[in-house]
Length: 140
Image (cartoon, rainbow, N blue to C red; front, side):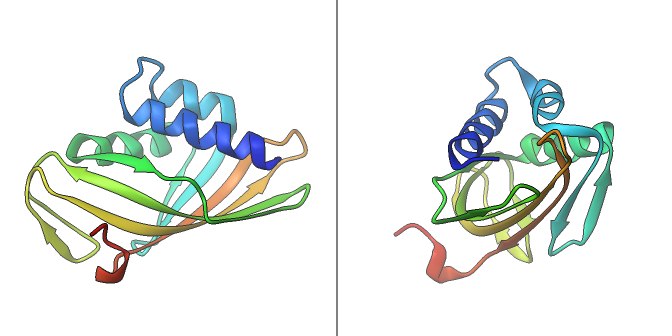
């Protein structure tokens, strides 16, 4: 995966989050192997396969609007991609995320590190996303 392809990947994810009509299913089908695993840290929750990954994304989307910002780091080989980027969330309801309470209508930022393992066709086979909340990452 090239950096330009990764930028398209993030743009398509953000579009699905924003409700562009394509949905998470089309996004998954375009970028992921059918039996891909999406792992979210700090929960260490593994979402194996299409239905589980889409269900996770939809559960997040039900309570927050997510936007991944341009990455600050990107490294890739023929089999692996690593990136770091801030992610902004707007809360659709009162909630607690990564141990921090947030009120409906407020926003917060996480710093995300993602490690993507690709199959020989360049589709994502396994991704592990680390999300960290810290007051220093918040938008002033």
